[in-house]
Length: 309
Image (cartoon, rainbow, N blue to C red; front, top):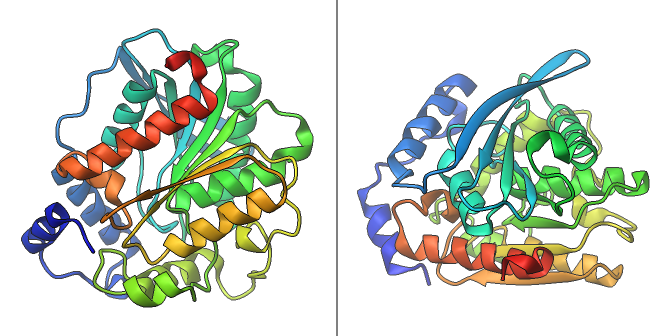
């Protein structure tokens, strides 16, 4: 059952818009506006700095959040948004909360979006960012500290796919922290049937975005697209997976955690009761969502940053 706070919040929202009727830029503008309304009052940082990585053929922006307390780790954060929307501003409040809760330097990546930059563009950006932070953490004020990759929704998909792509490079990645990941375009689980419409995330809209992201030529069985179909996950970093009870993607997240466990990867699964897909972006205005965000951060802290407790 959806949390009463979310039910009341849903009543304040207008009717949803079919993404097929809007241009990508119109959708991004609407999402920025919604994100500003949900921002609330995130904690102050010691510093927040914008920068850019110059990589062959592209410039990728990032934002570095430094906590007020002495940092105990470094986090790369990849935002959600169905591979089509989202940027450094839409998830600024979320990043501040995680940086403060975990007392970490957090670097958010503004990876390239579909349809202008379809698969594997966004993944390539995240892969390169993981390499950058894992090998040059001193440049970000986190020398010698544990490094964690984190993302929500599509961002979680990109970071876990990046972990598999990079597993043979010997990078020191303490953990992957995944918040309601989308793990492939098929979406045929029980939770997809039960919560696929009317619970904030409309599966038909997500399928529309997958078509933008993948086009007509990409093999959906590629584990970079559908991590649930990976044939071998041995050697990827330990994982903390957060799912939401009333999310059509809930069962995918649980199944992926089971797959990781099958291959001997330490994994912890959390379920946010009464929550929906996207709840961390509502943590500025929904008290229960903030509590679940804090709980996730606490588990990530115990799992990979023991000095923080």
